[in-house]
Length: 311
Ligand SMILES: *Cc1c(COP(=O)(O)O)cnc(C)c1O
Image 1 (cartoon, helix red, strand yellow):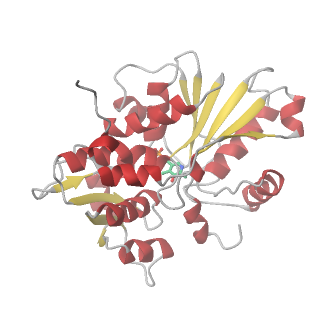
Image 2: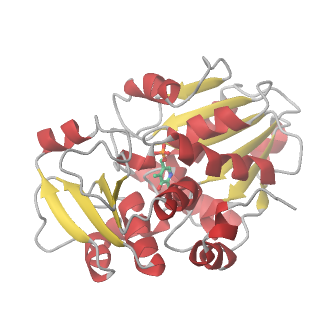
Image 3: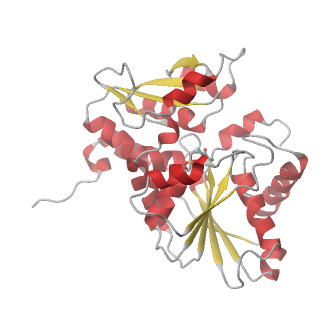
């Protein structure tokens, strides 16, 4: 008998890690505005998967890790900012799986290190700080062994874990949704998760991506570059970045505070807070049709709240 093996069957350490994850349930959001517009909103709680390898970071990493293990790599290298959820998750995962990790960080070594960077270092990640222009250049290396100077046994993950393998993990998120829906929403950094949703959902459903960055015009092409076919059912919304990546103002902070108080669901202002603010704003503008059911992905990232003592 020959059966197709899943990556977690082949690598027991990956299997153990997956077994330790929490369950990503669907939570129904109640709000008078939703009732008024006859729209249902459910949150896919990927924030519950793991406190550190949270949300879409686990989804994106799973098949990349399996690939690295199958190539006998002993070192994972990637890039991100000083608060990067991606590098934070990668550093912790490396520690759990017994792999070395190297994080290439945008900008100067902050003094003191951010709590995120401190933990990454504590978990054994080697931190390398590079100028913004060098960082931009690194974005061009997309393939696992394309990084200049990469050594045998080292495995390169492009920014945000943007790769075809990441899409496979996002497809598992989609497969877990066991109810009909019309629209699926997600926050976008690199747009990899959005590409994964577009790739996996029935093309009748629309995928709304909420850009977390200002001037994120690159997203359209970046999402497209991860997909085999031209996409028609995905829309990137640029109106809810609140002034730029990781920017937060009183309007957003008070929206999040109320949302958390009413639903007992923690948010963070970089991604999910902005997405949900956007969903409610679009709702009041009549963007959604009566009778529609929206699924919004809670992509986790709650560790990033340490950068916002007032939120
Ligand atoms: C990284 C991250 C995103 C963005 O994911 P992309 O695939 O890069 O678009 C969204 N939400 C949270 C919480 C994240 O940490």
